[in-house]
Length: 391
Length: 63
Image (cartoon, rainbow over all chains, first blue to last red; front, top):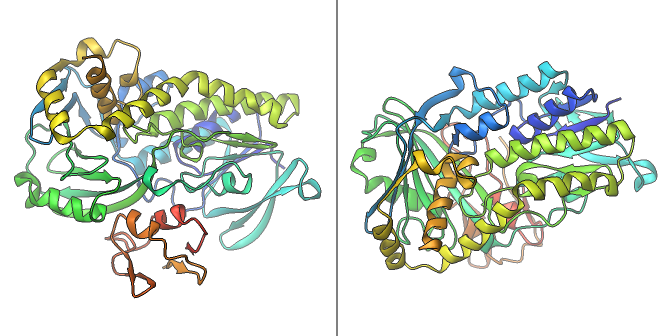
């Protein structure tokens, strides 16, 4: 008998479970895959400030590389630099990072299990309060008793669907992403991330090159609309880059990032959704790691209060919803507006904006409140657009 | 290895075709075709991303 079952051991689930366990709740953190952190579905870059803010300790092994900012290329290759003297971001090894987060949850007292897929939520008389989760553990059907279920099960959240909280994303709001890990490439600056914009490179999205140390990079892109599949654009992009062309692909990941903004409602009786399951994804950058961890902590705190009060009603759990919208809602909304503006910009518009901006000193900007705190890597693009608006 | 299952009630709307990052789905002569050799991620060939099933309006494609 647990107080809470957290479904999904990604960053959102692990932070929720850790926070709950720290506050004394009995928690089971259940991962459907046989290995936590696999497969990686992420560019793996994030900001150091965001991790520090959340008190997330990152072991040396989980950090592949440190970065000190980004260079953004407009369609005609006008450079906009967002650079700092000192490292401000990490390129992570998400396999090790995710495992480390799950381990922290375990050390706080959560029970962790892999190869355990939730298959149904059980309610009293079929529709009352939550009384458990049906799982398939190593292929065997089991019932795990609990009073609350946290769905941290990603963009395809089944918990959200069972609870009637998540709906399908319209195709025009779904960014189709693909990424190679490549070895044996030439890198100009080993500590700078690169972003490329343009309707021929990545319509409706952008391409990224994140250096992972040595001659290894993550190179990927996301597209919405466009003429072909994401991978056809990626192949073309790699062919067009002299430093990348001679590299070898050592990993391919694909997936979707919904960019229509967060879900309307993230709680129901006995149910809480967190991370990508609640679409706490920045609609402009597609970044979700920081928000997932941030909201994981908020969810952990709120559900721990519910455990103490023995009240898992939707009304009580709304405290979580209110809090996360207070903390990240405005940023998400701003990003959504900026995304719409970017969608309406032509290649020429972006070139003109890039010419205008030239160079930005991150040492100054990172002190400000705003997107740069929220996972350097991808939100940097959000900030670029923020500047576009002001000018 | 799992495969994607395409159900008979597929509407042939093409949502999954447009969104598939790997170009593994195709509408041809009023049929939805899955190119299995393009689906499933290299080099491990173990996991499909499931984006097609996420956008399907009638839940006609799933793992």
